[in-house]
Image 1 (cartoon, rainbow, N blue to C red):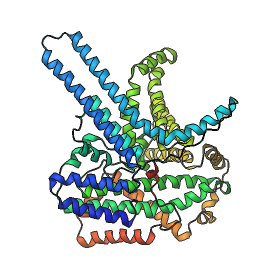
Image 2: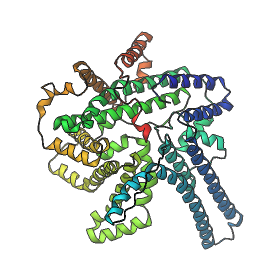
Image 3: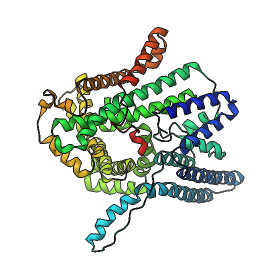
Image 4: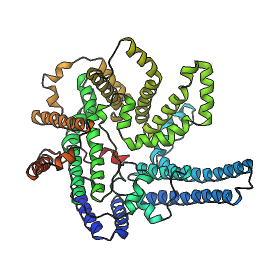
Length: 531
């Protein structure tokens, strides 16, 4: 069920009516039923994997919780007579038991994800190796379907289980309620990846109808639709034209398309998140924001703190930090300090942990080497920032650069956007080989006149639509700039008189209906729906 469809609009209106007509005690059941109805629209058979992830992590959470309780009870019962060594033995025993449960559950849910998403990718890469070894075996590809939203609900349920293991949260004891946490329909197909302690209680408690909250939620939904249909899908026409026929273009034309792809994927992804957050807000549930003005980032690491925040924070908390503080990486750091010296050596574990983390980020995006290169590319720049920061500070001090000046911030923003745009060659191009060819055609051909000779109007958009695209991109940047300045636009709008407010609403609705891209010109499905 696509977010941009009359089918979905009817579904959420029906859900809103039933939800607010139901007593608080049972509202969570309405959300659970609605979530599974929404998911079953994608196919009954793929719901099996959602149920499997839910049951496995719920059961494992209970078992880990029981191990925690048993350890606590044992300490309480014999706290006065147990020696420190005995207490340590009990703790180690409980930790090993919990770790076995955790590892088994994570192996199941992530094993299913890896099998369904990456099996054919592994086969495609094994075949050439076998041929090099003169082993003529043709391994058939499997006809596997990737269940809708599997990456999102796998990461969300896996994060819950790790938090239970760490003692950060108590395990949920109600399977049906926990199933709602895993399957909550606005976020299940493209996020955000929520944390249990931030979302669960909001889902389980009742909410009254609140006009202001409903108004804000509908505003967010409308803005998300605007970003998707008016901005992202219009930009996609140029992006698809250039990337799908890259041999016909070169130089600044390709670079412009890559930069537009950054705009397209931002409008597409953040638009979908806005719709999800808006639907949840109408219901009285606040989903965590997933974007924070990423085009105003001043470094690649700053960009990833602002872009797909829920994924970035998941990778940081469950992969990067555990790796960087592990015993193996501590030993690596000790050896690196002896080899590279103290200053550089102590950064090696963090550098390697960052590269591994962004390898996973790349693989998360898809079963293709181009996504892995995209992840490693970003990880390289973030790691380099970490390594070179002391030298940058000395360089700025030596040349007496004012890091608070507007000119310096503008330089950082433009430089970061350029680096991010180059990385998008890999995530958007058909393959690594094609991405490299496009990069060569970009950097070895200097043709700035394409912005003046009318070439840009031959990329799928006529003059009026091209100019409209530039206007709405400027509007999007202006809104982001106001948010960057901490201006709460929805609150400010609510303070205006009714005539002004409804003028803004009607203009937005008019823009969506008149200037939205409809029909078969571009793929209407959200890009991140496929992850």
